[in-house]
Image (cartoon, rainbow, N blue to C red; front, side, top):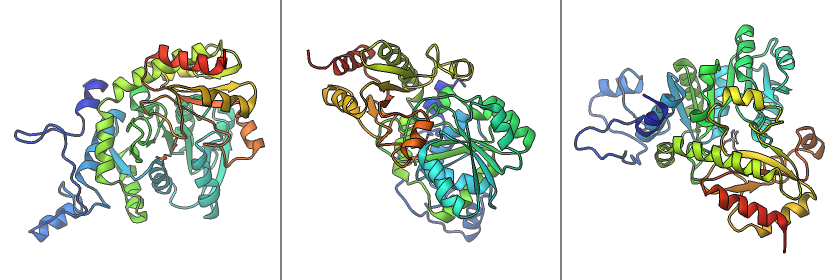
Length: 388
Ligand code: PLP
């Protein structure tokens, strides 16, 4: 089946007399009459569920659907992207060892490694993932490598195919956070990754109304991660899983429009007053253009950033003039939003650290939504033009 059909159908095959959409099974526990049957289900020999922290109908349906899109043997839903990441890192590296991570990875990913895991003895090696020679150097003796398909906020795209080859040669598991691309635009397992992580709260959910996370990968990794996740209590609830699966049913349509709107807006913004630079991986001149064109042939999603002359006052002035676009700290919903990394995603970093990542006082991140691109461009145009 093609990806679009998988998005619509995967994870559920309703039988005669059952509702077409999945019902919400809002249960923490399931009943049994036969001890042997309970034993078989609890030990995984027979399909079914016993207790909501381990599994449930709606979570299992979401897991099956994302596994079908990512092309993985299995998947593990979790209460958040961070919960999925934490369980997966411990599953890959149960004993402290060196963890190589993209220096521009999501801020809380870096905080988890640098604050919590470093305290337990893990050594964090941050690396510029666009520099393959540097990556190769850092992989020596590493327990794990972590990178992202598209970075935040400058939307740099690393050559994860080449990184996967380096990891395979060095015997290092590679985890790819595929949140910004979604499995519609990129399937890291096909490119050689060991496991794929998602903040389902973003494009898979797609409507800014849930928090969830997920790991997709080989069955043994998924089950090891599930063990950590259930022991540390990071399980996903039925309603969030149901909402996420509902969102996933239209993921292919949304990603096409997010990508189209993102590129249209980025192209249009490049010529507007006060815009010093636009960071979109598919724009001519982007340092990621060649790799992004190869790894993301169907588009790069709705995320991009731009640098506004005039810093924070100019960003505030633009914000106060928007009619359609909203300021919000998250991304990937149906509405177009902007965020200001200085005080949102990158607020825990020092000014020097932000500058080293290319985040300036004028950097604005855009999450292009699903409105008509003409309306969006007009809103940016009037907001940047200022009072007539
Ligand atoms: N990975 C990326 C790329 C993210 O942007 C985020 C959240 O913004 C996360 C992981 C963490 O996900 P969650 O907020 O669902 O825990």
